[in-house]
Length: 193
Image (cartoon, rainbow, N blue to C red; front, top):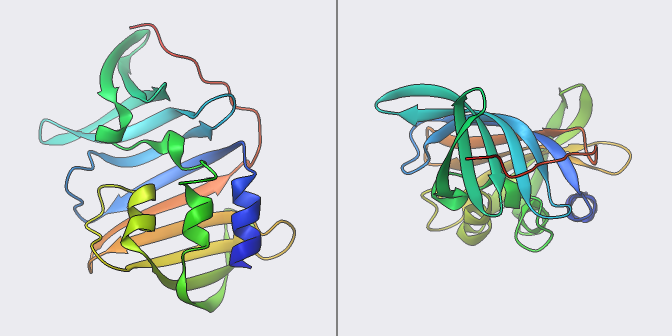
């Protein structure tokens, strides 16, 4: 099932992404994200995010385009924050080479741990560990120095699409990514700064 899900994920052109962060992950200023990601024609993303800003949360619109992060807190006013990788580059998670597809084939000792309905989709929950390298390709800010705890929820029937993934770093720190709207058209352009 992991191999089939990896193959389906490698063929994804776009998806809706919801990200939640629990605990305290150093150098990860984005603590929640709701947006759309695409890799066609190039890796890009847009949506809304909750970021740590001056000691408190700020809710912003974001665009990741051309490797850079653009943020807006007011209509038609965008700020270029430079390389998206300094924050969290959601646009690259669909890369067939370095994204989620690779994570799914990196599992060590995978085990089916149950079935759940996630976002209205019947899934199989699989737990195990992935290498620090695979985990950091998805969330570079994770304190992963060895195998990292990973749980995935994969669509039980059909294409076995990846519905959710949770990477844990330590007892309380985790990043959870939830996917829907697979391959629905997404258009992202560079905002005017």
